[in-house]
Each structure stands twice: as structure tokens, then as C-alpha cells.
Image (cartoon, rainbow, N blue to C red; front, side, top):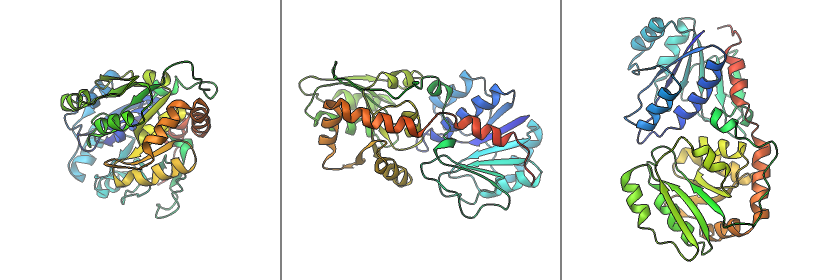
Length: 337
């Protein structure tokens, strides 16, 4: 079987769509499926490396329906996976009309995409309206698409936190940090006024310079690093992780990490609110306008191992890491058009 993946990444788009498609591609290739990416990666070197490291072929993104169908014919695709906020719906319609299966990964809004299988991996997703007749619905955290580098680090039991060391913090905001969250979060951390040992990922040199200008308080230490493929290993050793609500949230829950989230753009609000309301993570508010309680929330999480354990346990129980298996099962099962 040969499967195409139509998704993009870029400095403003971010890498979330690519990351979850790579996760599904890992599962499919492990089952003997050939996977080809049809993508505009926006010159993001980290995104390119994710495909190259896994030996996943990468082709230019078709710009119209004729090009999309031609690519499907040229590559001999049996199915197409789409994951995009900007892909015109006509592309998936045209591919379905050739008799090929289409699987659409969505976040609530279907954006007009026509598909045989819809996947919405978000918390409390329902996919209850506007689907094609006979379409398969895969909704909720049971279908969270997580990379193998995350899944293999999932602990057998939920972590229990202790107070035997200065809390280790990891802060990251995707492969591009398009809205420059890292420096703001670093400054917010210093306002907690308690000791910590923080690793903060700087997506580019200008962010690194801004982070290096943040003045830590007594007992507070920052290490600034560039984007790394070893992030999951850093996460499993962290006492607290700070990130934006999004695809990475489900990775943090699967790993049983105590997490504090913020939201950056409007399409993150729903996931943020649902995750915080369930007690799976603490909420810091919106970037550029953090909640007034955010410094106190961080101070409590940094000084209260029991509070961190509560978050870690709830999150670990919510995401079992088998979403890619379930979605691959659905795609590889024949579906009538």
C-alpha cells in the first residue's frame, strides 16, 4: 500500500500538523506501508530533518486539484492523508473522485474537507455534524497521534513527584515559536520568586539573545538550547513543563508530565480550556496577557510535589499512547466510497 500525506509547516504555520502526520507515518511504515509527503515545509530546517531522519520521501506540494490528482497517479497512491487549515477542500474531493481513500485530520472545524475517515484527536471531540455519509469518525484522545520517540518513553505507572531537588523545568513552544513565547515565559518564571533549574528552547538566534537577557532571581537558573530531537528525553526528566496548548499537550499527558499551559492563537482556546478544566494541566492564560495568578500558580507547582503529582496522574491516565495504532487500523481497513 502507498499513502500520501498532504500537510505543511512553516515559520508562521508551525510544525504541529507535520508532527502528528509524522507520528502516523511511523506507524504505517512499521506495517510495511510506503508513505510519501506532499508538503511545503517553509524552509524550516527542523521540519525537513524530521522526514529525512525517518527516510520519508518528500515531494513539492501540489498547488491545484489537477496537480494533486497527477501526484496521486504518479506516486501510485492508494490513500491520502490531509492535515491543513489552508488546503482547499477541492483537493480532497478530487482525490476521492478517483476512488482513493481520504483520511482528514481536523481540529473541530472540518474546513469543508471531504473524507472517508475523519480524525479529531482533541479532548472531548465529537465529530457529530457535517460528515460524508458513511464516513468513519475517530474522535477524542484515544486517537492522539504521538511520535514513537514519545510513546516509548511513556512510564508504566504515573510518576510521583518528590522534593529532593531543585525543580527542573522545560519550556518549549514548537519548532518555530512564531509568536516569541519563550522570553515572556522566562520572565514569568522569574516572577514566581522560587528556585528552579530551567531549560528553555530558543527557536532562533534572536530568541536566544532575548532569553539570555532575562535576569534570574536567587536560586533560579536558565539554560538556553536550540531545538532538539532529544526533547522527549528532556521532558521525562522535568518536574514541570511549560508549553502552548496544542499537539504537544497530548505528548505531555502521555508522558505523565506536570504541565502548565498557555494559549497563543484563537484555535488553541478550546483545547486549553478543556484541558485545564479537566485538571490535566494548570493554566497560565494567554500569551501577552497572562492571568494575574500565573506567577503564584508557577510558585505552587514548583514548591508542591503533591500538586505536580496530581496533574501528572490525571494526564497520564487520559492518553495511553496507542492513538497511532487505532488510526492506522482504520486507514488500512477497506472503506466503501
